[in-house]
Length: 123
Image (cartoon, rainbow, N blue to C red):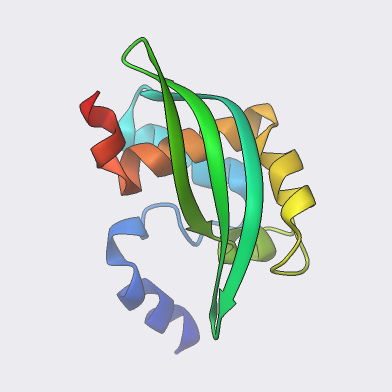
């Protein structure tokens, strides 16, 4: 029942959200969206917040979108990182930042922004 609840809570993310690891998630994102439109250059994770069952990390990312440098300030749920073993605790912002600055982490964040935050693609 729990995974069914998760799927109902985020139906638009079903394609990759509950993959067993980040590599499979990125592969699903690539199949769904084709070329990456948000090229993440550098990420700073600066705060974490917990509100009951939902924990988020707030970040600032230097990106290139349509050939222009764009600063993206936003947040994402850390549930994926915990499920994938990237972090153990919701407040592990250093490990989160370290992962997001790896090649696969930058690709994952780029697709996350592209899929879930399309307002950044307007530039």
